[in-house]
Image: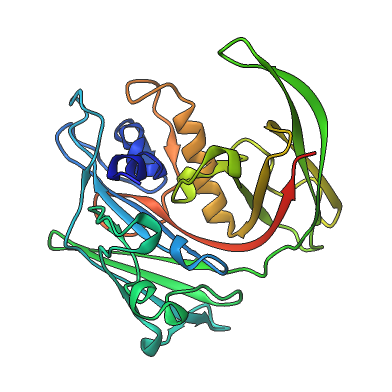
Length: 308
């Protein structure tokens, strides 16, 4: 896999230009020539190679080249801990993992600047960074003499009961051909506690190998909150279809509300029309000066399905 393909599949770094016209939900005074550190971090409980951090720096608002600049040589670490009854964190120093710009097998050992992994993925995969439901995680970054941090929680995953295929339709392709496609419906029981939020991702075999959460298909505009359906049994059909015979791995991620709010606000900003359109509010979860992004804890429940 070439380096450019990898970078094109990493969500925030490819569309970072949207952020230069947007506000964070906490106060930040953007000046035309002041770049932002863009942070995209993930931790999950199933896919160790998908626990990573991407660091980039946005360019001048008026720059016609909307690609960001990779931030290399940063100090990046993730530490596991617990939230105590008094709402303070107890971090386990022994669990701290230092992330580096490593060459991992999943990327054909290519070194991608600004993309940080646990090097144990190469030396000791069984000991590589992995999230555990019920725990909290601290992301710490030191880049260009400044420090940044974020926390995220790994919630109990909501289990996917089943995936069914239906709502078939004929899709007209660009070459004039017509193919039959089916849509996926995910079935699951929402917990009886209010405030549960989910994000939906999938990997279709027909689309070939892509790396990163940004390289997956996603239900970016599917409802992911239980505000109106708390405790009910959910049957959610995604709008996009899959060709007959395709194989799909489906991931449902239970996330904190602040993580959901970030991705919801990000998707709205992306649909906003570009960096020179009306500003949107991005609900950043990263603490520090001139920074934007999210540290996302994904508690996954996954299933495979064949489209038929």
